[in-house]
Length: 175
Image (cartoon, rainbow, N blue to C red; front, side, top):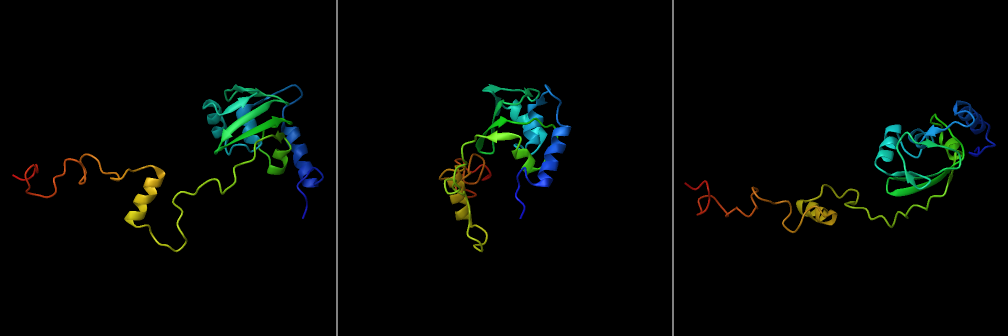
């Protein structure tokens, strides 16, 4: 199997094509476009939204999507439950394949948490069938969605205004 490195002729050709489509000497690239090009976010609009939301920092400063990034800048991106810290090595404007994208930055990110540390919520055994009402209440309680009374509130059958049955005193439909 061919290795995914600079010696691979396909990767070398892709790197050359990315550099040819990139900015000229002394030019810069928008940060939202760059983080999309090197595959740190899935879409350019998600990159712009991350910038507007304050999840992208360049050299320690929160930036707008139109901020210019240059070679040597440190980019911090908080996305999908982890923080990515990368140093820009090469500027590109167009989205490229993963082997080429990795060569455009130096990844200084902390390692992701192990999968065992992230507890799966509401995972059932295969073939166990649909959850019962009791199982659903237990899962909701684990997620913090319902208390001991469940979702019952004012106006529902189990709410505080319910008296128990039709025709009893205090029932608004009794007479």
